[in-house]
Structures are given as structure tokens and as C-alpha cells.
Image (cartoon, rainbow, N blue to C red):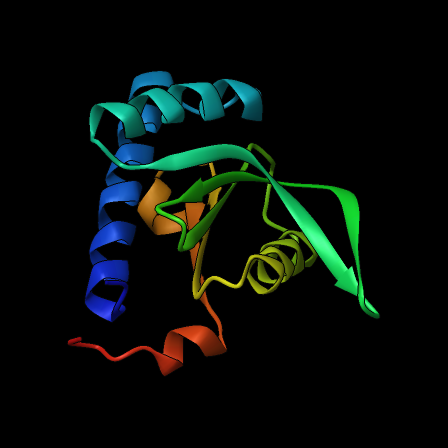
Length: 138
């Protein structure tokens, strides 16, 4: 069952996997390299995910196949967007919030591997209205 405690624990585990990849590789590589290594790290930690999750858009009673892809879709309840950029821009934040809305998930993590410390300046967590509807203990 997905509740706030489950999502908080999942965020902790995924953050740990990101830290492990970052400590092993360091900053300055392509996003695709971090994604491949993170996928392996998630497998080793038995965290279920799908990569390049296709995002469809429902618009006025039709479903459109878009070119949108979420980097990683974790445990069917969290979007993980990876970056390797000088700094996170508002467009990156808008992107993850929109992906969360379209995938109907309560939580999202935006990870920038081009930093000195993932927790201090490379991670932003997002929650939407779905998160606030969850029972914290159920």
C-alpha cells in the first residue's frame, strides 16, 4: 500500500542509490551515463522501476501519444528526473511537476549529478495534491 511513510522510505532509498552513483562517478558526465549506472544500482537494491516511461496525454476525450518520457518511474508511484547541468532551472521543475500530474503520482525527485553533494545541492523533492490525500499510516 502506498502511503506517506512508504513514499518517504522510498525517497530515502532512491536518494541513497543516487549518492552511491555520484560518489563512484563524480560530477561532469552525461545524464545518460548516470541513468545507466543508477538503473544498475536500483536493481542491486531491489527497487522496481521502468526507464524512459512513456507519458500519454489525454486531451478532450482522446489519448495522444506524446514524445514525453520520464527518465525513471519508481515503484509506480514516483517520478525520477535526472540532470547533469550547471544548475536546475525553473523549466526543469515545471517538467517534473507536469510528469507527476500526467502519470498521476504523488512524488517526484529531480536529481542533478553535476554538483558536489547530492543531498545538499543536487536533489529537489516534489509533492503534489495526490500526496496530501494519502493517509500517513494506512
